[in-house]
Structure formats: structure tokens, C-alpha cells
Amino acid sequence: MQQQSITNFNQAIIALRSAISQSRYRAAKLANREMLSLYFGIGKFISENSRNYFWGTNAIESISERLQQEMPGLRGFSPVNIKRMRQFYEEWEQFLFPDNQLTTIRPLSTDDVQIDLLVANRPLPTDDLNDLALEHFLSIGFTHHYEIIVNTKTVAERLFYIECCAMNFWSVEKLKYSLKENLFSKQGKLPNNFAKTISDNDLQQKALLSFKDEYLLDFINIESPDDEPDERVLESQIMLNIRNFIMSLGKDFAFIGNQYRFIVEEREYFIDLLFFNRQLQCLIAIDLKRGEFKPEYLGKMNFYLSALDDLIKLPHENRSIGIILCKSKKEKIVEYALRDTSKPMGVSTYKLAIELPDKYRDVLPDPDELRRLM
Image (cartoon, rainbow, N blue to C red; front, side, top):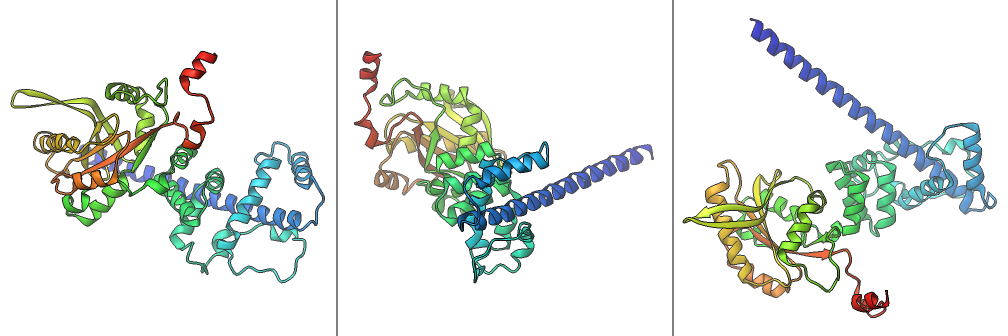
């Protein structure tokens, strides 16, 4: 009887904790929606009055200063931030209000400032923002929106990052990293054999979206951009910055170990990096290679994956996946090498932050010349 009471009490605590957490989350979403609606309305108000010359020069600076005087301690309404609100409105106005054509140009009144983006957009007259996209749009912060606006060019690209932020609860730091890495153009483009080696279509699609064609390893510190780091140097730098590397990999990756040891026929073998992906429910083996991809790398990886599936994988887990991470690759060679392989594998490249675009290489002095001059 006492044990049952304790169990019921614990269940009550769990239920209350869940209710509190959900209520807080809903409150935060409502507050964020209200803030975005306010900022969008202010942006519209500022845009229509400043762009159409109803106000004189330095009007935004004067507005910011007066707001600070009228509301001491007010934060978020500096001239820079007010201009960002205007930009937020101007970048999204045609998609949120595609039929909103003013017949006459007039100064907006204060009644036009507050706009409820959710109410104003039901039903939405544009295919760019469906109900789910709008929900994502309203659930991420203004700083996230600003970073996305200034670092993307197309609506599809913006919606991709908005969805990633909303679904994966990205911090601004994670968003900036993904924008810098140009995740949108790399997601789902990994050369692979998943179509033949993963029978479940849903899992196949998840696997494709879990890996990138190229990874930005801007935390790798080598002396010269022309020096290809040895595999051990590369691995050592990754281990020193494992958090950054996991951030580069993306969501749901859990680090298991480096130089992961297993034994076959009394001989030791070592996998450079071993991870587990929670969404895919499988082990991920990463083999680090300097220089250009070679077809023989896949034979070694095929052996690793066979051993992992036989010796390490748990019964409920899916087949292990292998990724060759090298400096460069030729697409046709990778295609032929992957064609008849039987284990799920892909080939990615890495890029170091200190690498210069080709157009700048002839302009700046090479490292040896720079050292001599210094």
C-alpha cells in the first residue's frame, strides 16, 4: 500500500512537472509571437514614414532617444535595432502580405503599429508560407530572424534555416555556424550508396539529411593552408575541439570515442572516430584521410562496418554507417567506388577556415614570404 502511494506520488510529480514545462513553453511562444508582431508593426511604421520622406533625416535616432527618455530602462530600441525592425518588415512584407497594396501613399498612424502576424495571415494567400512554416516563423527569436535575413538570398533558404531553428531549438551561435558553413547548399548532397544499402525509405531519407557533402572545420589550427594535416594531427585537433566538431556534424550525434579498438582473429583494429546517431539509431564510423579520396578507402571502411555490425551493434540498432572524410574528391571516382558496395557509406570533404579563395591566393603573399618579411 505504501509502495503504491509512493508510486502515485511520483507520477503526480511527473505530471505536474510536465504541465508546468508545457505551460512555460506555450507562454514563451506567445510572448515571442507578440514581440515579433510588435517589431514587424514598428518596422512597417518606420518604413512607410521614413522611406516616403514623411520624416526628416536622423528621425530614427531621434525616435530611439525619445523612447529612452520616455521609458527609462527600455532595451532593444537602439537606432540599429529599429533599423533592423524596418529591414525585418521590408524583407518579409511581400510574403506575409502579398495582396497588401496601398492605393495611396500616406503617413501611417499609430494604429498601424501593432500587427498580429498570426491573425493577419489566416488564411495565408501565398504558398511560400503555409501554416506550418508560419508556426515555425513565429517560434524563433528576432535575432535569429535578423541573422537569417542578412545571410541568405532566397525564400527557400530562409525557410530552411527557420525550420531548423524551430525544430532543433538552435541557439543563435549554432545558427551563425550553420549559415557560415552554408548548410542549406550542403544538406542531402553527400555522395552515398544509401539507396541500395538502406531498405527503409524513411530511414534512407533521414540518413541522407544527417550528413553533408562538405564540413567546415574552422577550429583546425595548422601553420600553412597549403600543408595537408596528417590524419593523426587532424584527429588530435578534432579531439581538442570535439564540441565544435559535433556542432559541425549536426544534431543527434553522440561521441563514443576516437581510435575505437576492436579485435578480429586476435588482431587489433582501430576506427578513427566513432559516433552514435540517435535519430538513425546506428553507429557512425568516420575515417579521416589526408589528400584526395582513393577507392581503396571504401574496402577498409566496409571491413570496419562489418565488424561493428557483428561485434558492437546492439540488436535493436540499425546497420552501422561509414563516412570517409577526406580533403578532396573527384565525383566520378567516388560514384564508381560506391556503386557495388554493400554497406551504407558516404564520402565527404573537409574545409579549413584558413583556406583562401582562389581569387585571393595570387594577391596575398604566400606563408614563407610572409614569414621572411616579418
